[in-house]
Length: 364
Image (cartoon, rainbow, N blue to C red; front, side):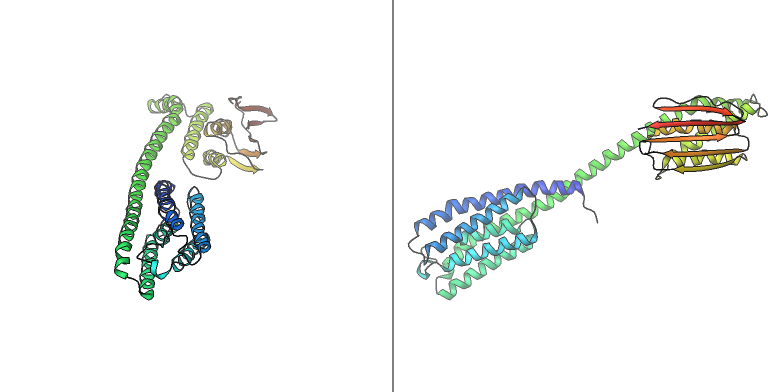
């Protein structure tokens, strides 16, 4: 299943803004709450150096995540490594606080940091995982307080306040994700509607341009045929009708989705000639660029005229040379085709020994 670029862009923009807000929250807690507590109670900890290392570890984790926010998302290996560092720093910091200062003196600076830092690492990946992480941290902390014999109720009051803010943040992230999905769907629908309208307008314009020329050539022939003025015993008259029939077949073939539209349109013209008994041989040589529609029309036009006047045999060749394509036709026609090319297509005509050779070349 392919991803929707419109949805991805909308979600990534909103997610990036929310992660930046999460990063700001982490930095505020680190600089405004954790650092003052760490410095004030430096003499209390079992090892102040261990506390500093834990604090710097949290700073490094926040910095790494901040650098990755511009890249939208980091890999799972990096994410798990950062989460392990976050948990390890918390364990070192919280177990390094003396029992008597754990709750009563509020010396443990790491408890207020670990939850926000965990959200920064996990929240863009999984909402459920973030909630489970917060739950695990609080369960561990409560269990540790019970084990060391401190007042768990007093701890619970502070923990609930912190957890309440963090869960509200998680809920906001989940709501933002749903909003982003709805917004991207609305953007996608509007874009699809505009695209459909543009395609319809372009198709209509192409049809008008395609049949504008036929209105000048085909309609008069049909009018002559309907009024009885057309002399179908005349070779020139039959050739005119054959030319218009081939042009119409080529126009119909323009709508087909094929790999080589030039050869496909030539085959449509060849079919008209074969229906009137002309043996036509079609060859292709080499790779050639795909000409635009207007160029293809000019390249095919000499073939249309030549095949319309062919008596018994014809040979059509498409020659590609990388930056050019040449369409040539050799027929036993006795009616001169003329040089009907328009720049940048050049058309040359040669007649000898009862054969007419017409060559049209387009250079890219």
